[in-house]
Length: 552
Image 1 (cartoon, rainbow, N blue to C red):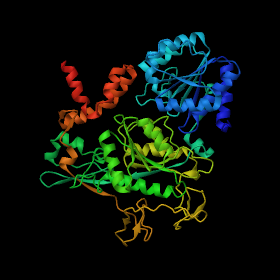
Image 2: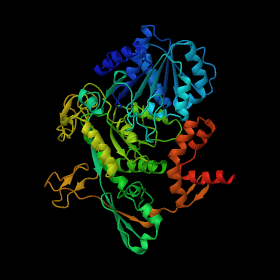
Image 3: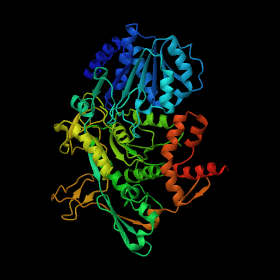
Image 4: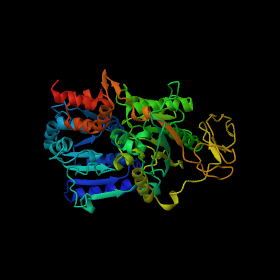
C-alpha cells in the first residue's frame, strides 16, 4: 500500500523512537488524515523486523474496530479477532490482530495483561482521549498493557472535555500534553487540507430571532446576540428564564396545526439551508451526502420527519434504540440516500467519506465534540475530489469560537468559499456538463431535478436558492429568520416516557444528567447497567435517579 508522505515520515520517526528503547509514541493527527493506515503500516514494519509477535487495537466502538480489521487485512493480510469483556483466556491467540473496545477492556484487562507477559505485544490506542487517568477505561489500559513491548497512541482530539489527563500522558501546568517532541508526530487539520488529505470547510452561522408569545399576549424576543429583557413579573419565574435561551429554543420541535413538523421552525430553516448546499455540492460530487446531528432522540426523529417533508425522501435515522444501527450506517455509506440523521452514532472513527454537509445541533457543546463531528464531513473521496465541507450551525458564541480556530488553521487560499459552480458532473460517466444541462453531454444520462422552496427577495421579488446570503438579482442581504413560538412550546409540559409521567423539571434535569451517567456507565464496564441505560431515553434519568435514591 502506497503511504501518504506524512504516514511515511511518522513511521520512520516512530521506529527510530522505539529503537532507542522507548515504550510510547504519540501521533497527534487531525481526524480523516489516515491514522488507521498509519497504525497498520507501523505494525507491519515492526512485525517484519521481528520486533513484535502480536498486535492489539483498542478503539471506541465496534464499527471503528471493523474498519481496523479491514485495514489490517489489506495491509498485512492478517485476520483480526474481536475480544469481549467475558474472554478470560486469550493464550490461544498466538498471532494476528486482537480487537477490543474501550468498554470491554476493563473486564478483559487481566487476560490481555497475561498475553503481554508472554508475547511481544504492539498496542494501538485509538482515540486515546477516552482513557482518562484514574478512571475505569484508563485503569483498564494501564493494567492490560503494562508489559507491552510498544504503544502507539493515536488521537486527533487528545484533550478530554473534563480537562483530566489521559493515562500515560502527563500534562503541564497549562493543561498541555507534556511528551517529548522526538516521540511525537503532529499534523493539524490545516496541514491535512494543504496536503489534500482532507477537504476544507466552510461554516454557515445560522441565525434567527425568536418571538415567544406569552399567555397574556405579551412577547419576549430572544436572539443569539442580545440578552433577553424581562419585565418584573417574568423575572420572578426562573423556569421561564431557563427555557428562553436561544439554543434551547433552537432545539425545540415545533409542529403545525396538523401535527406535522412545522416548515416555519428554526430546525426546518437549518435543514433547508443544508439541503440547498447539498444540491450545489452534488454538481461536483453526485455521491455527496448530508448528516444531521441532534441533541436527543426526540429532536432526531423530528428532524427525520422534517427532512422527508422538505426533500420528499426519507433519511436514514440511527440512534441507540434503533436495531442494527451500525448496519444502517454501512448501508448509507454504500448507498445513494441524501441524508443521515444521528444521535451519538456517527462520531469518532465512523468513516463515511461521501458525507459533505453537516447540520449541527448537538447536546454536548464542547470543542472535542465539534471537531469530531467536523471530521465526519472532511474526508477525501478520491484523487479528483475538489469539494468543500459545509457546516450549518447555530449562531452562538461557543460554536463561532471553535469555527474560527478551525478556519485559522487552514491556509489562506482555502479560507474563502469559491464561486457558484458552472458545471455539474454525471454520476454515471463522470463527465461534466454545463450547469443548465438537463442531461449529460457524453452519455445522455438525465440529471436529477428537485423542487425546493425558493428564497424570495423582499426588495425586488427575485427568486434565489435557499443557501444564498445576498439576493442574486439586486444584491440586498436577506434578513435574519424570525420564528414565533408560543409559551407552551417553549416550556413544554413534561413528557410521558416509558410509562412515567414526567413534569418539565424532571425532563430538563434528566436531559442534563444523561450524558454524564451514560459515560460513567460505559467506563464502569458493567454490561447490565450499560444495556439498561441504552434502553432509557435521556428525559427519564432524573426520575430513575430519584427512584433509586428512595430505594424503591
